[in-house]
Length: 118
Image 1: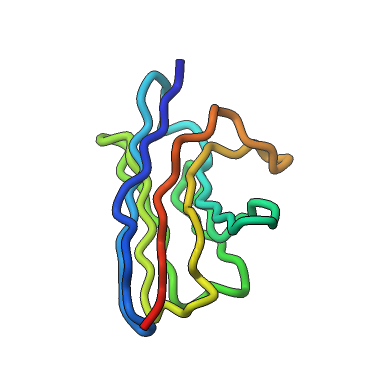
Image 2: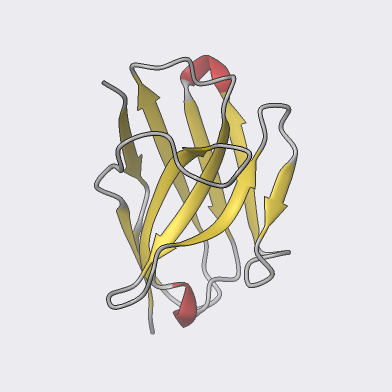
């Protein structure tokens, strides 16, 4: 059974930074593209960044230039460095593996809450 554990969220002021981590267990991590998603109450989960198995990053327009996704295959971990945070970045953040068609592969973890507020 694959398990995903997200961490690193918290309360930060606008303009601040956070680094999220997502550790995967029970799977061969390196062969999968990985994505970071976020969800706010009442809205669908949205993809904010993804990274291919060959480490090519792709970002949603809303976070381009502010967020950086990376991966450490030796640690089965994917990261999301978030800079210049805005109140609209407030959400629960999740990670998951992605297929080429855009669907997710594994059960969702519990996520990590990011709150951007003064």
